[in-house]
Structures are given as C-alpha cells and as structure tokens.
Length: 287
Image (cartoon, rainbow, N blue to C red):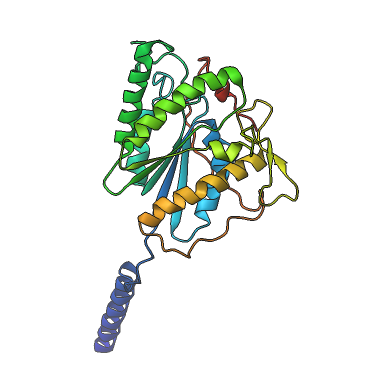
C-alpha cells in the first residue's frame, strides 16, 4: 500500500514539474517583423490635428510605429520655459526612433535665453541668427544617431504680414542649419499652401471630405481638422521615403484612415509645464 502511494506521489511530482516548466519556458515562436519607429516632436502644430493625423496615418502602415511628444507655445528660444534639449534627449533614449520628424520655430521670434532665463541674445540683433543657428545645430546633434534620419518640416505660410517677417528669418536659419547636415532633410512646405498664382491657399480638396475645405483657423496659423489632414497627407510621403531608405518595403504602404473620426489617434504626451511667458501667435492652440 505504501509503495503504491509513494509511486503515485512521485508521478504527481514529475507531472507537476513538467507543467511548471512548460509555463515558464514556452516553445520558441517566430520573431515578429521588424518595426520602424517615427518620433514626432514639436509645438502646437503637433499637439493638434496635423500631428494627430500624421501619427495615426503612420501607425496604419504595416511595420511602422509612430509616437508624439509635443508642447504648445514652445520652441528653442526659451529653455527656461520648456527645455527641448532635455526633452528631446529623453524621447530619443525612450523610443530609439529610425526617423524623427520636427516642426517648431514659430514661437522663437523673441530673445534667446539659457535654461535659467538669463544670458539673453536680443531678437533682431546681428548676434541672434548665429546664436539660434548654433542652438538648432545642438538640438539636431541630440536627435542624431548612426542610421537615423531627421525630417524638419518648414513652418507653413500664414498670410499674416507682421508674423511672416519673423518667420522669414526663422525659416531661413532653420533651412541653413538643417540642410548643412547629411542626416537631416528640410521639407519646404510653401507649395502646399500657395495657389497657382503664388497666393495663400485657403481651401483645398481633402480626403474624406466631399467639397473643398478651409485649411486654417481664424488665427491664420493653426489648422482646422480638414487642414491638419491635408497637411499630414503632404508630409507623410516624405516620412515614408525616409523610412524606405531604412528598410520599409515598397508596395506595403496602406491607405490612411478614410474619415477624420474613424480612428482615434493615440494621446499626445504633453509636458505638465505651464507658463505666462508671452509668445508669438503660434502659442494659441485651437480645438
């Protein structure tokens, strides 16, 4: 009787050990296809419809993962308010992206400061352009890595005369700083928002809408929902082209979501930082 009981206990012990081993060490499975990561960084244009739709349309592609980090009213001029050098480094380390897409600068038409709000370089002075160019270069250095591509999207035209005078300076310096690098591409957006006569394009046919839609909100800077979709549809091919050089197969591109509300975009992570610092009109973040 005792022998039978002992044998039964041994069998149960062996069986239980086998089950535990199977749970802890499942049979090897086939590795998933390589996923390419796109990191979107920027100000309120990334917070709102342009950033939302660009992120969701990229995530609709096989083998692509897109993430956003954005903060309204920010740029490279005021690290005492929001330090993109620090945040950029954190996001690069967190996501290790293959492509980084950046759009910012609209809030930078002001004095440059250090991270303590001191060491001012005054806007409009000869030293400003040189100091800003160096700051842009330092930011690009933080984003860069072997094999990684950076796409800097130029600020769209606004039609606001006073604001455009500032943006012309900022766009030029950004273009010079980005174009001087082999790992970065500067995407000119002027043709996206001008008509055949060179005037400001106020309406356009947008996928998912039956009639031409207004592109900008009343502030002349931020995009309507349709305008954000339109802008994203123009920038998206440039992102895919850079990803193609990193290994995305031709012919695997999936059409973007058909309707603005058809796919809920991932939540954009925005810093908890708040400020009363006066900014340019780009600081206004519409719905």
